[in-house]
Image (tube, rainbow, N blue to C red; front, side, top):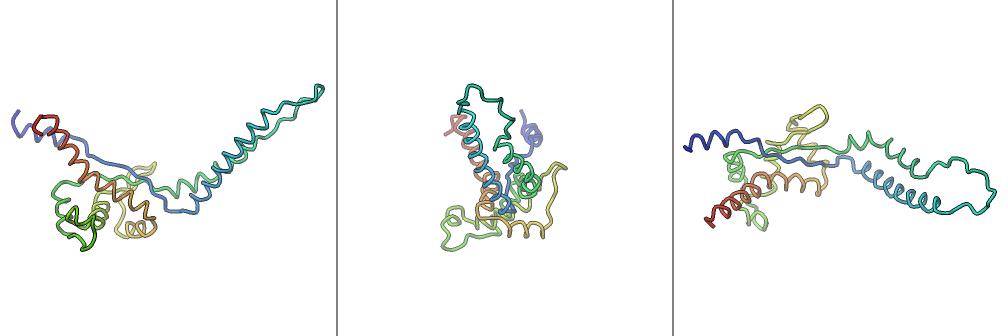
Length: 192
């Protein structure tokens, strides 16, 4: 196979991407956590109550009982619209190597930051810039590019955990993932 054929095949490969979900309204997440805990309790109580047999032989048929879990589940269902507004789905696509290299060169490592010293660039700045270059918001209507202002507002709202999810996803797509692929090919070819 000649080199142009190899390149043509590689150009047909689908884009590598990853999707993450982040929370922009922690109050809704807290409400859901409380409801889920109440649901667990209600399920246990309903199971306990249904295991107790009626003691009287001539007892009338019991009236239909509304299970506790049904009431809690209804509250969870009512909260679903708020949950949908609170969870934002973002999809990131791997940048081409030149763009990634430009970002790492434009963002030198910070002194005294071990992570930066290890990689040779400002890990956080590169990850945020790459996220903004390659990320889209995903919903039932499709993919939506965010404006610079929307990115700025979103990043301010996110917790450290959510920002770490984005940072790790972008870094894995552009640095760690490709490194692992090369390592696997080298190992598999016997060139190791």
